[in-house]
Image (cartoon, rainbow, N blue to C red; front, side):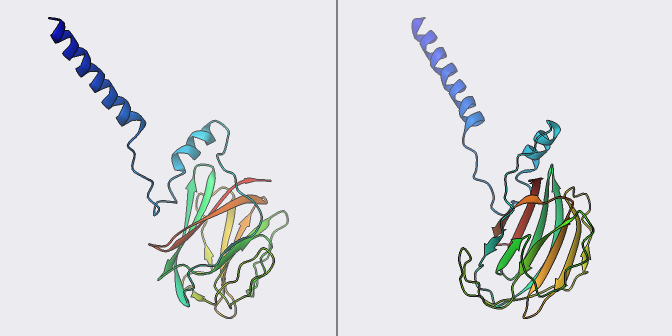
Length: 203
């Protein structure tokens, strides 16, 4: 009789351990090609609690890219991820050098900014530049876009307007008009090739 009780206890303990393992571990690593949607659930929960799980910066970001000499911007995809606005830029065949910031100089003429607004600039490609203090060298790349010069921001909160303009020497510029000088983050994927700019809380 005692032997049967021991077997039952062992079986019960094994079953409990299996349940805990399934609940607490064994998850697959996140898909690097799903960057646009990975923050959605957390952002929605926090937004409902009056918080935003976002911590970025307002300093310019420099992405040298893989040195693709020529590429096409094939899509500009706005996405509202809870309290975070995201712009996904699909590129073909590969990533290109990019500079993102509020004080980025462009060869394209920016759209007229309304009083009280800010423009976050995404500069893609352009001529090669040498390294400088805090700025990496950037290879030359020609980037083209055959779509509209304006893109509807849809349900975005921070980004009020999206403008696209072709600059000189293969440069392509995007101007994101914001109501506040908001923090931002960038992320990239090599395959498929895209750049995501996420905009969150203001400073």
